[in-house]
Length: 264
Image 1 (cartoon, rainbow, N blue to C red):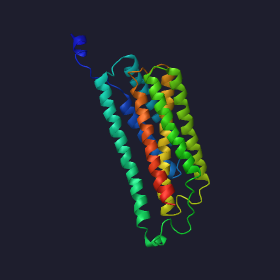
Image 2: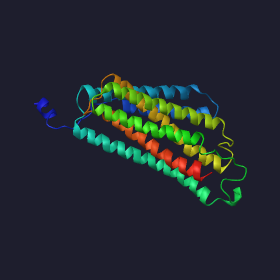
Image 3: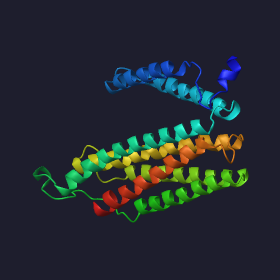
Image 4: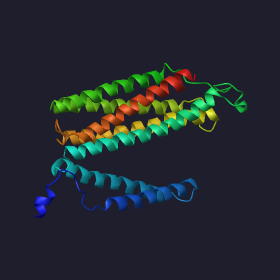
């Protein structure tokens, strides 16, 4: 009777899990440790919080992978719900970037008298948009092509080609991060040097953080692809990572055209 009732629908009723509570506690430890770290009290609490958060992520995602890949709980209707959830998550991320762009355009289109009424402010030496920024644009656009290639090969059930394409995407993501780190180190202005540095580093740094997250996301997908978790008709984990990566690509195009090119 119980078994019949359990198979009467395709929805996944998740078993009780300790990870939401454990994750909340871990995040609390990390946040509290961050406050202590910024006040120069101690740094081990923050480090412990980071370890606990990473452990929660690994264990929770392990359970989700088991439920989706090996236990068959992620039927089409469940996958549709996951797609809606990922789309809404990306929409919320868009709002974050809207805030940074709003701050930048508010300062650049209506520069206050405190900075001389001009943009960029006097004394600010901006980056040449057609050096490292343009190279990074080419890198991200190429990575968008390779991640789409990987998706095509997964759907065609060509795992070897998909592994190659996804590996190239990850290498391109790492290259982008390395070049942006070099750009930051050699920047002729500082984060605390005024409104230009603040808006520049907040917008581009927040995007760079997303590139790092996306690279980690794709690296997990590479491991799962190697383990044979993805099938031509069942690979939403990869699809979610690809959506996120394309979102990062599009945001960079706006950053390059407005902050690096127009803003210079």
